[in-house]
Length: 75
Image 1 (cartoon, helix red, strand yellow):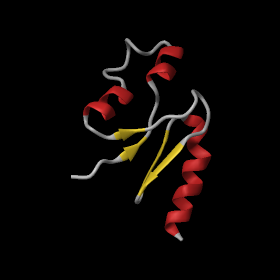
Image 2 (image 1 turned 45 degrees about the vertical axis):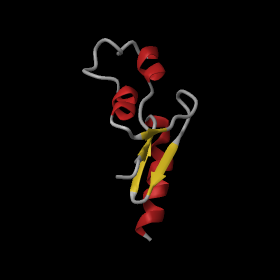
Image 3 (image 1 turned 120 degrees about the vertical axis):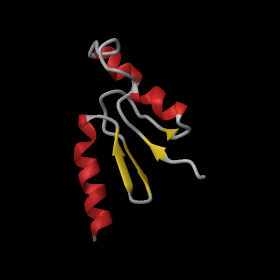
Image 4 (image 1 turned 30 degrees about the vertical axis):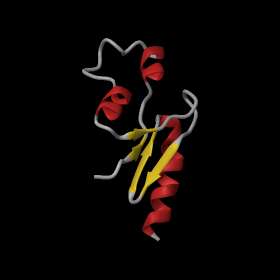
């Protein structure tokens, strides 16, 4: 089985909004535990990862980049 390249909210972003102890799990930790190839950029900055048809964004600042990547895939 090949690794999946993915991003999502970082542990440090969760800590910054004081939700580390509120959410049921930290997505960064879960992706790594599931052997996904988790990548991250600077906190609160746009960061997009494309892996085939899977497009993920790290945080809300990434939404425009994710939309642009999806449009590219749809053409």
